[in-house]
Image (cartoon, rainbow, N blue to C red; front, top):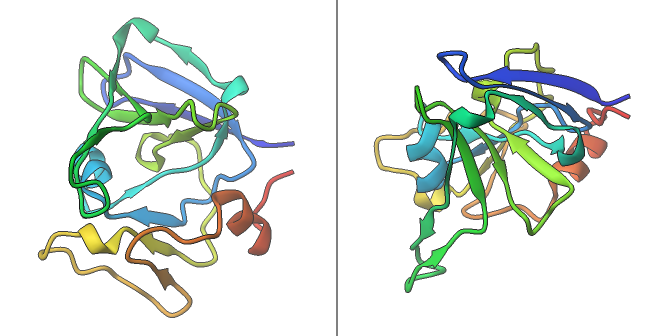
Length: 165
């Protein structure tokens, strides 16, 4: 049975829960969007959830941000299909939904109130876009990528034995 993740914003105006096969907070993203929206350490951590199981209270307090992506790969800019949901009262980033993958929702680990499993290793992504002041804490066993790894969140969880059936 998937793990039930319960989360909320800082002020409590929005609460949510979602079931997850992939609850380990292993992937640290250093892209400017994640970092500026909620990455106090210079990165953000996204989890995976089953979108059909997402239940939200306080929906009237939700806002959606769709970032414009301008980087070396997209110099002309492109509006992301990703819908970054946040609380309009306190600004807490809550989850990302992207209609490209309608079966998934990606809650931010920072918004989860439930106990999360400790990852067996960490993966640092989008290091190409980290600011100069960020010094990634890359430990033995961690993997680091300038952009994205080929391994998906689901594949990582299965390979490391952290998949929750």
